[in-house]
Length: 472
Image (cartoon, rainbow, N blue to C red):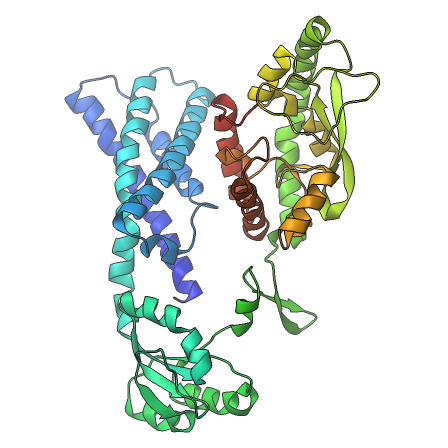
């Protein structure tokens, strides 16, 4: 599906959610006032608008490809919709109650706001599970009726079998294939329409919208002619990126000094504007927390440390950060202090670890020990959101076992990250979970946005309040 079309469908999807949320607010208010005969809400237009902005904002950074949503079965689509709905309702609640506490209108009913937020879950679940399919059905119907032909040598075309079968199953129409060599495809069910030299006559006599080109080793000999035939007959040309099969990550189109290249990694944070935006986001949240929270916790934790495990207030350790450079990370000390330094710092904390004193266990459970890392954020060694920094010993092991591991070091490490906000934290006990963490870090590097950072911060707050079993 055309990228512009996918982005347009996603934009429509988000707009429908925002408008529906605005309408649902008024329906809930009508039920509240007319049927339940409860008190009138102050500033209703403000709350309706804020709710729409909240649900529209919550879709940034969370929506994958439109194909990813629509290609799933009904049950899997419902599961994805439920996950999206949970996050959207959480964002609505945050926006709405933030607006409530920021206004002085006393007649605003907190009960109604709770009623509206609770009932929004069902409405949004229905919309998230049904709207993508409806938009795909009605707005993509015309594109599916358009006929395509595929062009390449037999071997290359056979490698495209899965892609062709998937699109055929979704209703897309392929008239057949033109071959660029004497070898015809063996596995494709599509008819062979002849040699590529016959393409022009076929396009003149048939209504074809798109020519899909699969490159081979002799592409330089026939691609100019195929391009000329296609443009002469008003056909869109889609060239398959055959290099992608050699790499685990998607190739990204970039331009350097007027020349066009492919890159193995999309890097939104290469943009100076995005770097500045992320830095401002970090400072806006970090500076107030450093001023208001850190001194209070320093006093509280210092008292418990003196009572249970005398020693330094902070624990400092060398970690690997941006570009593989090492820096010193700050934490509140949660383990017993050894003056002789006979403790192995590379040994991860385990369940019921005897090195952790009792209040230290509480701190680790609710991630209080991570709070001093705001100092690292302020210094610029870390960001609020990013891949978690590991010890050099662990970094070496991961780099040996996982290809392209150092891609996660293209950005600053974070106090929290895409894996940690989903409960994947703590001891490295399961190789599959470690792989999931690293893949999430790769995805974050390639798809960063300010909205994604906001989502991860909000998810992290939930993880802190309701910590997973791996938090020890």
